[in-house]
Image 1 (cartoon, rainbow, N blue to C red):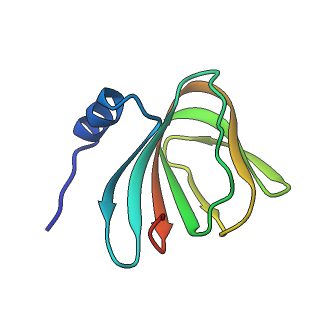
Image 2 (tube, rainbow, N blue to C red):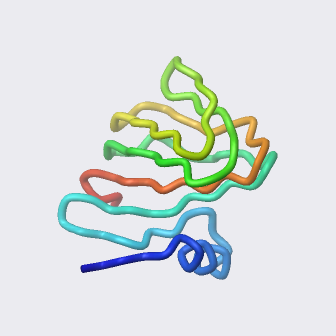
Length: 105
């Protein structure tokens, strides 16, 4: 079994001065923690993998393709491979668990 604590993952991500920390990589998926501070810009580009986002904390809007919605703690968003997407209007520090399938390369 592999088990993780969000507070420890957040501390590791912050210590490495990055917005993203991949903490699990398996044959069919990878999982990471993504962070944006209030007002920060999301510089992501479309990925070659399907993604699922689970908002752990914070508030923002997300645009996936032509659709935009507001997200907050507990929101789950599916992003198909190759589709442009961005978080924006981050009003509270955003922490998002990201699942890639297949694993992010």
